[in-house]
Length: 183
View 1 (tube, rainbow, N blue to C red):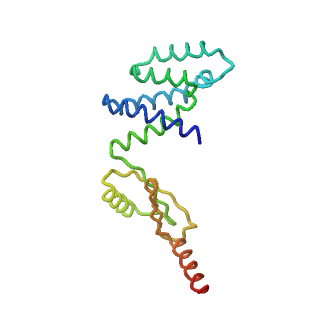
View 2 (spheres, rainbow, N blue to C red):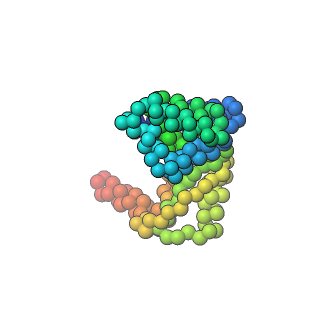
């Protein structure tokens, strides 16, 4: 939980800088590139994180790699700051949360739809349009199936859950009937 809070704090700080200088999208792309570098260059991330290696040597490696990239000066400074504060291992989480913040700035919101059966493209478009009208933002849908719902759909957008599943309706009906017996 602490890692998540730390990652969010750094992502929020970087997005504020991006908003000020108008480079929020560029920083998003650069973070994605750095995470990709960590993913493709086996051992690079562990070399930066591993405390068995001398900290000054690890920092020199990071500085040499950053010098050979075309990253912005802000991003290079951000990476050095993460290293100096011992937070370079949180880069993936920082990049992920930063992307959410950048999407939010651009009016893009993620929503999930869980249904008992496969939904048609027409039904998904109608759900997407309705959510877009309610929020005033562009919606990106993540669609899942859960046969345990029996029927209907459960839609989540941020903290809001719209549960129209048959399973929930049956549970609510059962609770109502139980309350009626106790009266």
